[in-house]
Image 1 (tube, rainbow, N blue to C red):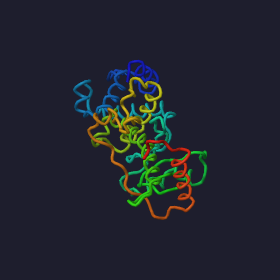
Image 2: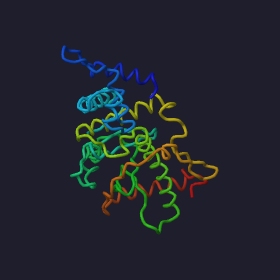
Image 3: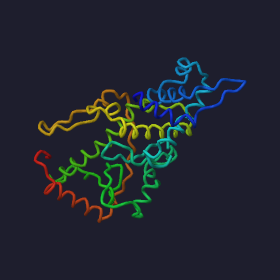
Length: 286
């Protein structure tokens, strides 16, 4: 984050996080609080390390982190929509931004219930959301009229393989979005040693910061070589720099599918197969 964006963030957060001095103690300066919180989520350092750097007690830090991350989310929440979670399920758009996040599932929820228990699933099933587009998922999700997934199995036709390839290109955007989030906010590269409520606030704030910086500071936060690029001439993938910087990745959710995909969804997928092999075909795709 550059100085300009930090100062803009600080100016907006100050009314929410500034405390008054009392005869008993000096309040921690407002400028220090976001510095500490951003260092914590960007690097994943321990409270002990922050205590040594800023000479602030760990007890105070344990109160400061949720306070500031909550304030960040309040200020930036219009950059990301969703509900609150320990398991992060998100919709990533073509611009690597998190359009919807579900931070409400916990370890007591089975993986098969995460998506089906979300507000997004309910809205999609009830045709509340605008039409004209669709989500792209992998084998962890069931085929729907609003959600395309690859053909499974080994005995696929040429056109089915082409469809799977084209779908994998779209899913690469999602992978890069999560990869950039994880490499930029290294708190996600190891277990987060906070209570569930604070962890939720950290996830919320990080997703909102990711979207804000992606849209307002692309040259600093999102240099052109940070994401995977497909070389059309050589038919190769040039991996983004985030892959080299990443220590560990966020694990994917497991299979949520059944074999009971509605026929109308199967027919719709077949229509896209025809398009990608006809009007939407490119010479190097197979």
